[in-house]
Length: 195
Ligand SMILES: CC(C)(COP(=O)(O)OP(=O)(O)OC[C@H]1O[C@@H](n2cnc3c(N)ncnc32)[C@H](O)[C@@H]1OP(=O)(O)O)[C@@H](O)C(=O)NCCC(=O)NCCS
Image (cartoon, rainbow, N blue to C red; front, side, top):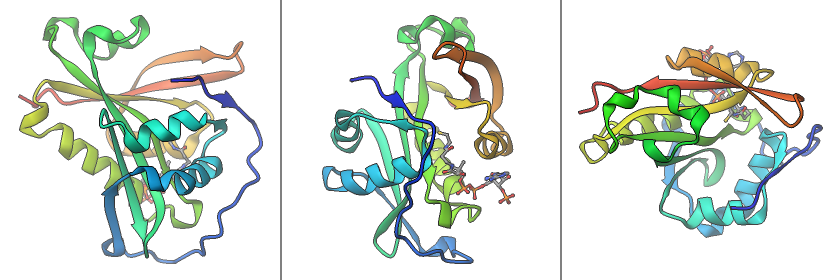
């Protein structure tokens, strides 16, 4: 997949109107499909300080290796989570500390590439709904070899850090990227009961 590029100022806003309070029972979840690319692009542009290439949007909306779930309100995508299951043995060296290597070569881990909620809909439990759905999926019998979920988040992203700490993820490492300009925290939640 082509690399993404960073940008520092996000000025784009979506035209979605705020709803307050948002009833979680009015939110539907479904998997992303190629027809969603434009809406996903708009949401990511608003939420992330990076510019993903077109092929990234094509991949996450069509490749079944991604668990790409959208949250919808009145038919509009207002949140998403994108995750991938990775074989532990294929993780890069710095990610291997997230679980003990003695768990065995067949061990898998979930990696969260993206989690985003439109700013007008935040603090309504929508990210929690998306993450809980992913965790339920990865703790099902089908994924009994999946022992942890991990992700990277910028150390400046207080909202996300609070969110993941509230969801019982813990910090396992710090990474520097882009000539020390960006520092990430690596967060992990372990699922050792998953067998
Ligand atoms: C991080 C993000 C996904 C949270 O989405 P959300 O739908 O608002 O999250 P929830 O409503 O489920 O929040 C659950 C808890 O997380 C914590 N939290 C979420 N946003 C927070 C904020 N801005 N400040 C402090 N704590 C926050 C709170 O403990 C919150 O519980 P509370 O509202 O009862 O206090 C959202 O802020 C977002 O899309 N940010 C931009 C994209 C991003 O940074 N993604 C994460 C990196 S992949």
